Image (cartoon, helix red, strand yellow):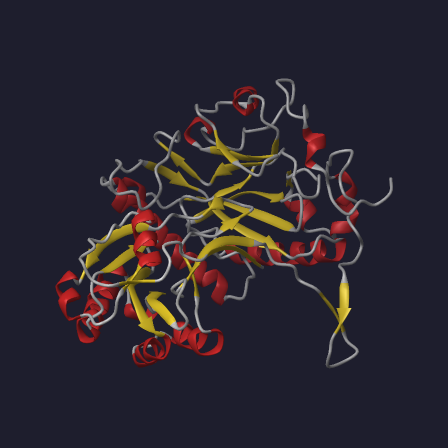
Length: 431
């Protein structure tokens, strides 16, 4: 078979059928897990019902063509229609258990990189043997660039906390502490996976929609042997890519040494410009608050002092649960805004205003191939209205409209307005 450059996921039409067997026996109770899959149109679906076995999962696919299938690393009292982590208006779901999962990838897709990933996975497995609190479950070949190691948590104290939100937060904290130990010990794991109770992981027995290889459970005996000795035993779709022996390489600009080109996962997000459309040199104070300002509650308090000091007027705040986004929809002269930014530690905003005359600010979670969109931004409130009368700058029409679209309409007084009503928005992809 000639080597292909791209696996065509359309060949998966009809691949999953009621006769197709996906082994879910490694899950204690499949009915307590959420199942999600991506389809040809690059949209995500979640199972609308509990999944007890392969047959009910395939039925949940209905007429869609799954290109990639995932399962939650957590088990829930009710895994159907799970609310988002920071949805405080909906009753919190009851977390019953959470698998400890480590994801090791060495891109790009090649036999040499798989051997490197195997060694990394084996080293981590040996290191985890010293952790009596966790029992090894199994390891899977992801179907592409690496391995997933699964462990059961033998410490049950956190899962006995009565309040569902406090329970989940306690588990996340414990996972984060373990992850920090793993990273400190030098193990190259994906740091977005282990500590996140809402994460999904590729389901063993299903096709990787990029390579056509099957995500497969392997034995520890295999993991201890060179990848090339058992690679041929791995299952794949008949149209799967041929795994090259070596990764694509390019020469260093500074030496003759040849290095592998590591291709990271592509992440997509939505960004909005600080520039006031229709003006020459005006921008809104629109930026994520510095990490050093602490969690959202503390960061907002510090931002309010800034609003008062510079009479910024009504200011809207959002959070993704970790950081806080601030928008003062005023048409501020660019040079003056750069000085405010520099004085208060907004280095990114200051540099972008100086070098590019405006800054692009992320207003969505990132989208990646493992979990789709990250958590949405949640509105906090519109604050500092008392400084409106002292604010000397006109409203930014575009950013007033943006705030309203993002769920925080700002009460508009009779003050002057500047610019056009439509904000500048773009979709970006970064590796």
